[in-house]
Image (cartoon, rainbow, N blue to C red; front, side):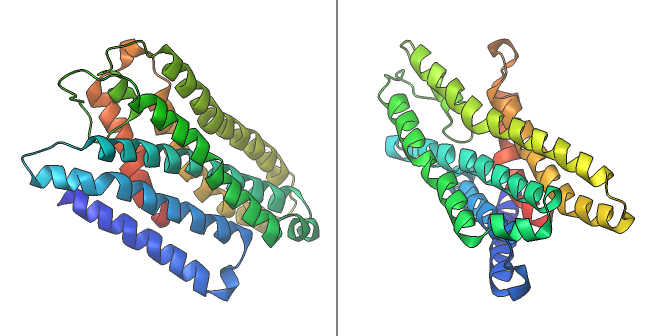
Length: 262
């Protein structure tokens, strides 16, 4: 029941955020354009994972087909990093709005650029997710094929491979640095610049307005990148299935629920 309620809140919250920001003519700005894409990512991410969790709770047979597992790996590796790229475009939007003149902001963040950034965040993940899934599911698995996790993820799956996985691990680390740590680093640098600009503002009202538009984005960034970084950048000695499941829950289940509330 708890997971069902969480899933419904995530679906309804993100759906209404998309609906309201689409229908309200005053919200046709780049900030809400990217926010709609973030909500669509959250809907996709939770739908890939939670329905199967609910099925496992209700059924004694807690198995997943080979194709179903491959689908979970593909779409989770698509939606998760794509969300990272959407968050970095939102940071770029906030940086341009606060650190540049309003006239220049409207010229830079035009509809064409917004569409290009949104498409890039989606299309860039298709070949990466395809290669990652193909590499994983061409490896030979052990006979029992049993993983201690609530969805098919690369790290617990690599534990049941009985051959050398060095090439896959190198690819995984490279992809994680590219689509997780690099966006996070860029966001941090942009917000350092934003904060410096805000502190230089003479108007207290202007400072409050600028901080209010950035605080929600920073909270979402901290929740998502914090949990994802702890999950994928830990040494094997500190890795346990229990801690991995708790961290995975935070960015695959709870963050998509909190995003529309934030």
